Image (cartoon, rainbow, N blue to C red; front, top):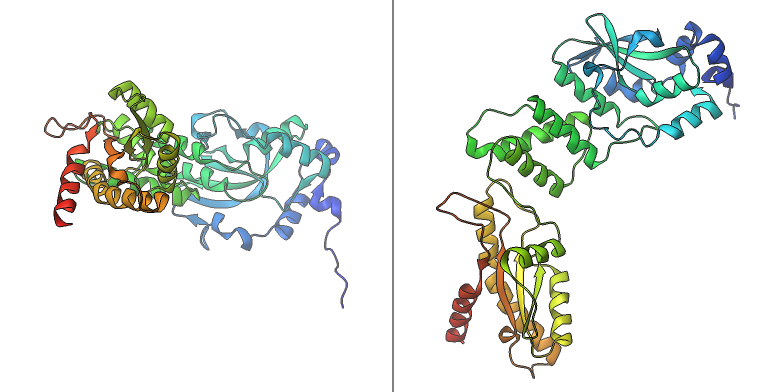
Length: 383
């Protein structure tokens, strides 16, 4: 078996801070970097054979050294990571890592973009700041040139934050801030289409940004973001997103006066949920003889057709409710108890629309009792 042989001394690829303070990065460091860095492993950040990154309107122009004074990081053009208003949580770790283990040439260095002859830092601002604090006079950089839209190029800053280590990755809140900032600046690219299709156009535009930035967003967060942007920036109808049962209960108390008494209690839950079923079963045992009124809320609205989605969702509950609580009654009391549908009542649904056109008012509690009565009457008649 052949012994492993290193091409470079340890201190050549993990440059000690003391040496960098004295000499800064040198051309020899650039040569070593080009020799040890995995360019093939990070091919997506260097573009095609000619260095073009068409998705980001950038062109890779090379690896080199810039003095600290040549790098601009206090300018609106450089704010390509506008989502990180709270700073990078990894900053202390990055500084300590460089100080203890040296500057590792295997890591992605600072990324700069050349605009009108000047270099703006695009990624690696935390590392750049750490190097300043450590007294390093210049920077090893990967350089690009802006060849198109600045807004398009700003995506690259987000994308770069998903690559390499340690980075201080963006969370969902950061991503939503980034998307909202693009929408406010008018650089969120919406496809042409009718106003009635705004929500679906917004969703497509956001998904494009997420893909090009290498970011992800949960389905509920994405829906919420679409609704908030549609309402606050594009003048759509106001929408309320109810995220949990406690919030629904508070709305029920405050807006509809749904307060528990000795004769009845309210249970708030989403349709078709085992958690809601468990709440009902517990209440049946805990409050004998008390009417249990179930109020449903929709926690994951479909932004493409809010009104139709809500109405369909509420109406579908009737049949499910009747069958479900008949079955629960038989299971809990072995068939010896009268039908639980006399004690467990689908009372209503809280709409997540706070207003709609005058002909479709949806700012009131949806009363499900008449629907339930008709359904039960039909079942009894058939039986």
